[in-house]
Every structure is written in C-alpha cells, then in structure tokens.
Image (cartoon, rainbow, N blue to C red):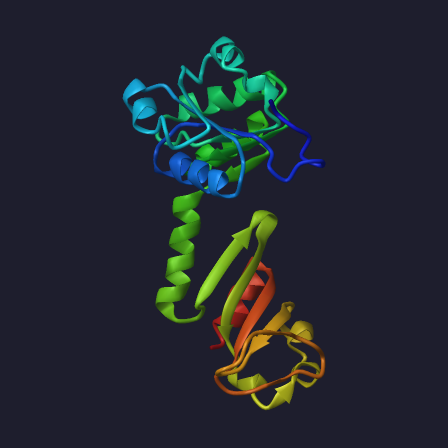
Amino acid sequence: MAKDRNTSPATPVIVLGLGRFGTSVARSLVQLGHEVLAVDERTDIVQKYASDFTHVVAADTTDTEALRQIGAEQFQVAVVGIGTDIEASVLTVLGLLDLGVKEVWAKAISGKHAAILERVGATHVVRPESQMGKKVAHMVTGTMSDFTEFDEGFAIARTRTPARAVGKTLQEAALRAEFGVTIVAVKSRGKDFTYAQASTAVLEGDELIVSGPTNKVESFCALT
C-alpha cells in the first residue's frame, strides 16, 4: 500500500490516535491528496470518523502484533497523535519503529515527554501546545505578527522594520552583521511581499520576513 516518498507526492500515511491533533493532521493529509489509515483504540471514535478518512480501524496501538495485523509495516510515514497517555505514546512509537516504519512523527505534551520520544527514536517530535503558546505570546506582545519555530533552534517571523533601519537599504542597515538574522522579504503598505536584496530600501511601517536562530530572531523582533 505504501509508496516511496521520492516517487509519489501522495504518500500514504498512518495516523494513530484520533484526538484533536491526530484528527486535524489526518484531515489535512486527506485534503492534500494522501491516503490515510486512521487508527484509534476506541470503537466509538472509529465509528465517528468512519467516513472521514481512507480507512479507519480500531486497534491497540501499543501492541506491535496488532499494528502488524492492520498493516502498519507497509507505511513509510506514521503520525502518533497520542498525548495524554505517555506510556501508550512511547510504546506506539517503539512498535512502529520495530516494524520498520522509516519516518515517525509523534506528539509530545511536555519537555520530558519529548525527550523520551527522541530517545526511543521518534524521527520528529511535535509539541503543538507549546509551539502555539509561544507564537501567541509573541503576537500578544506586539513584537511579531507571525512566528514559526523549526527544529534545532531555527525560526522565521513576520515583524515591523526597526527604527534604526528605516530609510536605509538592507546593505546599509547591515542587520545580518549586527543581529545575525537574514531578511528574507519586505512588504510595503499596499504592496505584495518582494524578495529582499542588498539594495532593497525599507521604510517606516514596512513588514519584514526574518529568519535565523530563534534567540536572534526574537532579539531582533523585540526592537520593534
């Protein structure tokens, strides 16, 4: 059933745990054209989403044999949406890895949970509540209008031009040399974003797309 990710943009994905996170991911995958095998241990949940995804089955995801019976080993990509039951989350990840699933994305509800998942071999660990909380905090304080943090301490943000750069070109402002961030794009009032170049002049009120190490992006955006 599963296909090579390098040859098909619509790779089948198995999603285990149909809480809010797992259901949201599964629905988005379907909208993107992927086949989705959705799995939950509760039969009432399985019945609720029976017509929403390509296949929906009830199974104990902590049992490797049960995973094998539903064909989990045929998938190259899995998403584990189990959060509140840390033991079930970890056992599910281990079972998928034992079956040879190459790419396992797992939801974590705390730093300790994330550390355990990384230690047992999860390919990607996602902390949606923490990431959203940080994003909202930046937006509430007014330093950014959008913020996304990626793995290994890298972030991209949307912010306003700091006063020290107003009226200068990016080369003249030398923001990268001083702050260690890269200006990716610039948007003036009433215009679309344009790719930033050394000769791009920035004006008061212009919006900037900024990328770089998370701490440096945060420090730069705090200037606004």
